Image 1 (tube, one colour):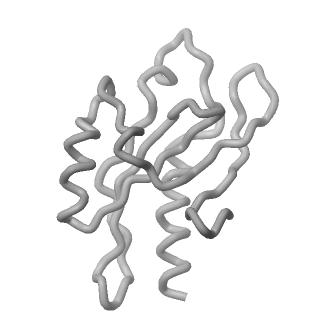
Image 2 (tube, helix red, strand yellow; image 1 turned 45 degrees about the horizontal axis):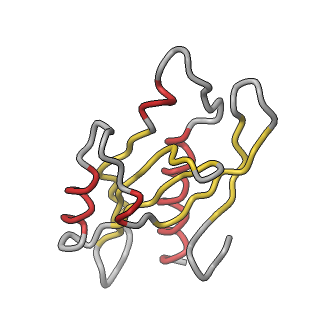
Length: 120
């Protein structure tokens, strides 16, 4: 873990290639895609008032997935709420190179891991 930015490097298997490292890290507004199913820019704007965070998974600077989550209640954190999770539409098609290691698994792992660090 890169503790100063809350980032983790995790191994992923991409179809037909060697294992690569993916980066799980807090997302920025500039990371929000415009052509995915969820309206990520709108979700980003709303997360400021709802105390939620968006995390991204990227492989070699390509965005593979996003998750929005929150840890509640604020003064006694004990619940992780995952509100939105989406993988890059490009990796969902039949003819594209796919991650063999699921994107959602690592994004959920990140949210739970952060919560466990807070409560311990």
